[in-house]
Length: 197
Ligand SMILES: Cc1cc2nc3c(=O)[nH]c(=O)nc-3n(C[C@H](O)[C@H](O)[C@H](O)COP(=O)(O)O)c2cc1C
Image (cartoon, rainbow, N blue to C red; front, side, top):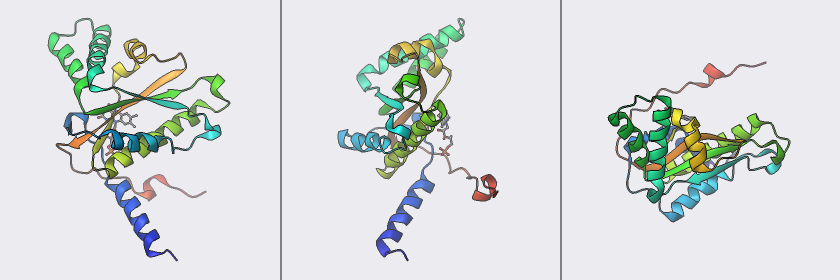
Protein backbone atom coordinates (compact mmCIF):
# COMPACT_ATOMS: atom_id res chain seq x y z
CA UNK A 1 0.00 0.00 0.00
CA UNK A 2 1.51 3.35 -1.05
CA UNK A 3 1.42 6.30 1.32
CA UNK A 4 -0.22 9.48 0.01
CA UNK A 5 3.23 11.01 -0.41
CA UNK A 6 4.49 8.03 -2.44
CA UNK A 7 1.38 8.17 -4.60
CA UNK A 8 1.86 11.91 -5.17
CA UNK A 9 5.52 11.40 -6.04
CA UNK A 10 4.58 8.65 -8.49
CA UNK A 11 1.86 10.77 -10.09
CA UNK A 12 4.26 13.70 -10.39
CA UNK A 13 6.97 11.50 -11.96
CA UNK A 14 4.53 9.97 -14.46
CA UNK A 15 3.08 13.36 -15.37
CA UNK A 16 6.59 14.71 -15.91
CA UNK A 17 7.67 11.78 -18.08
CA UNK A 18 4.52 11.70 -20.20
CA UNK A 19 4.20 15.46 -20.70
CA UNK A 20 7.77 15.99 -21.94
CA UNK A 21 7.97 16.72 -25.62
CA UNK A 22 10.62 17.78 -28.10
CA UNK A 23 10.80 21.53 -28.61
CA UNK A 24 12.76 22.63 -31.64
CA UNK A 25 15.75 24.83 -30.72
CA UNK A 26 14.17 27.41 -33.09
CA UNK A 27 11.35 27.74 -30.58
CA UNK A 28 13.49 28.06 -27.47
CA UNK A 29 13.86 31.67 -26.37
CA UNK A 30 15.00 33.69 -23.39
CA UNK A 31 15.20 33.37 -20.52
CA UNK A 32 17.29 30.25 -20.41
CA UNK A 33 18.10 28.46 -17.18
CA UNK A 34 20.11 30.48 -14.64
CA UNK A 35 23.28 29.15 -13.00
CA UNK A 36 21.39 27.28 -10.28
CA UNK A 37 18.98 25.72 -12.77
CA UNK A 38 21.85 24.75 -15.07
CA UNK A 39 23.48 22.99 -12.16
CA UNK A 40 20.28 21.05 -11.50
CA UNK A 41 20.00 20.03 -15.17
CA UNK A 42 23.63 19.00 -15.59
CA UNK A 43 23.82 17.27 -12.20
CA UNK A 44 20.91 15.04 -13.24
CA UNK A 45 23.21 13.58 -15.93
CA UNK A 46 25.47 12.25 -13.19
CA UNK A 47 22.58 10.16 -11.83
CA UNK A 48 22.50 8.03 -15.00
CA UNK A 49 23.23 4.29 -14.82
CA UNK A 50 26.93 3.78 -15.36
CA UNK A 51 28.41 0.26 -15.42
CA UNK A 52 31.75 0.27 -13.57
CA UNK A 53 31.42 4.02 -12.97
CA UNK A 54 33.34 5.08 -16.06
CA UNK A 55 31.35 8.28 -16.64
CA UNK A 56 31.54 7.24 -20.31
CA UNK A 57 30.32 10.59 -21.63
CA UNK A 58 31.01 14.25 -21.11
CA UNK A 59 29.15 17.50 -21.62
CA UNK A 60 30.56 20.61 -23.28
CA UNK A 61 28.69 23.87 -22.66
CA UNK A 62 28.70 26.34 -25.54
CA UNK A 63 28.20 29.74 -23.91
CA UNK A 64 26.73 32.66 -25.90
CA UNK A 65 30.13 34.34 -26.36
CA UNK A 66 31.50 31.19 -28.07
CA UNK A 67 28.54 30.51 -30.35
CA UNK A 68 30.29 32.28 -33.23
CA UNK A 69 32.89 29.50 -33.24
CA UNK A 70 30.14 26.90 -33.59
CA UNK A 71 28.55 29.01 -36.31
CA UNK A 72 31.78 28.95 -38.32
CA UNK A 73 32.16 25.20 -37.81
CA UNK A 74 28.60 24.66 -39.12
CA UNK A 75 29.33 26.81 -42.18
CA UNK A 76 32.68 25.14 -42.85
CA UNK A 77 31.17 21.66 -42.48
CA UNK A 78 28.49 22.64 -44.97
CA UNK A 79 31.06 23.89 -47.51
CA UNK A 80 33.04 20.70 -47.10
CA UNK A 81 29.92 18.65 -47.89
CA UNK A 82 28.86 20.94 -50.70
CA UNK A 83 31.44 23.24 -52.26
CA UNK A 84 28.62 24.97 -54.16
CA UNK A 85 26.70 25.96 -51.01
CA UNK A 86 25.22 29.43 -51.46
CA UNK A 87 25.65 32.38 -49.11
CA UNK A 88 22.05 31.90 -47.98
CA UNK A 89 22.72 28.27 -47.09
CA UNK A 90 25.88 29.26 -45.21
CA UNK A 91 23.94 31.94 -43.38
CA UNK A 92 21.30 29.37 -42.38
CA UNK A 93 23.99 26.96 -41.20
CA UNK A 94 25.56 29.69 -39.04
CA UNK A 95 22.20 30.74 -37.64
CA UNK A 96 21.68 27.29 -36.11
CA UNK A 97 24.48 27.98 -33.64
CA UNK A 98 22.57 30.90 -32.12
CA UNK A 99 19.41 28.94 -31.31
CA UNK A 100 18.40 28.27 -27.73
CA UNK A 101 19.78 30.21 -24.76
CA UNK A 102 21.47 27.17 -23.21
CA UNK A 103 23.34 24.71 -25.37
CA UNK A 104 25.41 21.65 -24.51
CA UNK A 105 27.15 19.04 -26.64
CA UNK A 106 26.94 15.46 -25.37
CA UNK A 107 29.98 13.34 -26.18
CA UNK A 108 30.40 9.59 -25.67
CA UNK A 109 33.78 8.43 -24.37
CA UNK A 110 34.48 5.15 -26.12
CA UNK A 111 38.17 4.82 -25.31
CA UNK A 112 38.91 1.11 -24.53
CA UNK A 113 41.46 2.25 -21.94
CA UNK A 114 38.69 3.80 -19.87
CA UNK A 115 37.51 0.33 -18.88
CA UNK A 116 36.13 -2.99 -20.10
CA UNK A 117 32.59 -1.76 -20.76
CA UNK A 118 31.22 -2.22 -24.28
CA UNK A 119 30.64 0.98 -26.34
CA UNK A 120 26.96 0.11 -26.57
CA UNK A 121 26.60 0.27 -22.78
CA UNK A 122 28.41 3.58 -22.70
CA UNK A 123 26.06 5.08 -25.25
CA UNK A 124 23.08 3.77 -23.30
CA UNK A 125 24.50 5.48 -20.21
CA UNK A 126 24.79 8.72 -22.21
CA UNK A 127 21.19 8.31 -23.38
CA UNK A 128 20.04 7.93 -19.79
CA UNK A 129 22.03 11.03 -18.82
CA UNK A 130 20.36 12.92 -21.66
CA UNK A 131 16.88 11.84 -20.61
CA UNK A 132 17.59 12.87 -17.01
CA UNK A 133 18.58 16.33 -18.25
CA UNK A 134 15.53 16.60 -20.51
CA UNK A 135 13.24 15.71 -17.62
CA UNK A 136 14.83 18.13 -15.16
CA UNK A 137 14.69 20.93 -17.75
CA UNK A 138 11.02 20.11 -18.26
CA UNK A 139 10.38 19.98 -14.49
CA UNK A 140 11.93 23.44 -14.21
CA UNK A 141 9.39 24.69 -16.74
CA UNK A 142 11.74 24.92 -19.73
CA UNK A 143 11.49 23.37 -23.13
CA UNK A 144 14.34 21.26 -24.45
CA UNK A 145 15.31 19.49 -27.65
CA UNK A 146 18.02 17.25 -29.01
CA UNK A 147 19.61 17.96 -32.34
CA UNK A 148 22.18 16.28 -34.50
CA UNK A 149 22.61 16.87 -38.24
CA UNK A 150 25.45 16.05 -40.58
CA UNK A 151 27.75 18.80 -39.30
CA UNK A 152 27.80 17.08 -35.93
CA UNK A 153 29.90 14.28 -37.39
CA UNK A 154 32.30 16.57 -39.24
CA UNK A 155 35.99 17.08 -38.69
CA UNK A 156 35.28 20.76 -37.95
CA UNK A 157 33.18 19.73 -34.98
CA UNK A 158 35.84 17.34 -33.71
CA UNK A 159 38.42 20.10 -33.91
CA UNK A 160 36.26 22.78 -32.33
CA UNK A 161 35.34 20.61 -29.35
CA UNK A 162 38.76 18.98 -29.05
CA UNK A 163 37.35 15.46 -29.33
CA UNK A 164 39.74 12.58 -28.83
CA UNK A 165 40.06 9.73 -31.33
CA UNK A 166 37.70 7.56 -29.25
CA UNK A 167 35.13 10.24 -28.54
CA UNK A 168 31.83 10.41 -30.43
CA UNK A 169 29.63 13.50 -30.53
CA UNK A 170 26.09 12.25 -29.81
CA UNK A 171 23.85 15.31 -29.99
CA UNK A 172 23.30 18.86 -28.90
CA UNK A 173 20.88 19.54 -26.06
CA UNK A 174 19.18 22.95 -26.14
CA UNK A 175 17.18 24.38 -23.26
CA UNK A 176 15.12 27.56 -23.08
CA UNK A 177 11.70 29.10 -22.73
CA UNK A 178 9.11 27.61 -25.07
CA UNK A 179 7.91 30.18 -27.61
CA UNK A 180 6.01 27.69 -29.75
CA UNK A 181 5.26 23.99 -29.65
CA UNK A 182 3.69 21.31 -31.81
CA UNK A 183 0.72 19.31 -30.62
CA UNK A 184 1.90 16.35 -28.56
CA UNK A 185 2.70 13.41 -30.83
CA UNK A 186 0.84 10.12 -30.38
CA UNK A 187 3.04 7.83 -28.35
CA UNK A 188 3.45 4.11 -28.88
CA UNK A 189 1.63 2.14 -26.22
CA UNK A 190 3.10 -0.68 -24.18
CA UNK A 191 1.61 -3.40 -26.37
CA UNK A 192 3.35 -1.92 -29.44
CA UNK A 193 6.80 -2.65 -28.10
CA UNK A 194 6.37 -5.37 -25.50
CA UNK A 195 6.11 -9.13 -25.81
CA UNK A 196 6.38 -11.94 -23.30
CA UNK A 197 8.79 -14.82 -23.65
C1 LIG B 1 20.32 11.67 -30.44
C2 LIG B 1 19.13 12.38 -31.02
C3 LIG B 1 19.30 13.38 -31.96
C4 LIG B 1 18.20 14.03 -32.53
N1 LIG B 1 18.39 15.02 -33.46
C5 LIG B 1 17.32 15.64 -34.01
C6 LIG B 1 17.48 16.67 -34.98
O1 LIG B 1 18.59 17.03 -35.36
N2 LIG B 1 16.37 17.26 -35.46
C7 LIG B 1 15.12 16.90 -35.07
O2 LIG B 1 14.15 17.46 -35.55
N3 LIG B 1 14.94 15.92 -34.15
C8 LIG B 1 16.00 15.29 -33.62
N4 LIG B 1 15.83 14.30 -32.69
C9 LIG B 1 14.46 13.89 -32.32
C10 LIG B 1 13.86 14.81 -31.29
O3 LIG B 1 14.80 15.09 -30.28
C11 LIG B 1 12.60 14.20 -30.66
O4 LIG B 1 12.97 13.16 -29.78
C12 LIG B 1 11.63 13.64 -31.67
O5 LIG B 1 11.21 14.66 -32.51
C13 LIG B 1 10.40 13.03 -30.97
O6 LIG B 1 9.79 13.96 -30.16
P1 LIG B 1 9.59 13.69 -28.60
O7 LIG B 1 10.95 13.80 -27.95
O8 LIG B 1 8.62 14.73 -28.18
O9 LIG B 1 9.04 12.32 -28.48
C14 LIG B 1 16.91 13.65 -32.12
C15 LIG B 1 16.73 12.64 -31.17
C16 LIG B 1 17.82 12.00 -30.62
C17 LIG B 1 17.59 10.90 -29.61
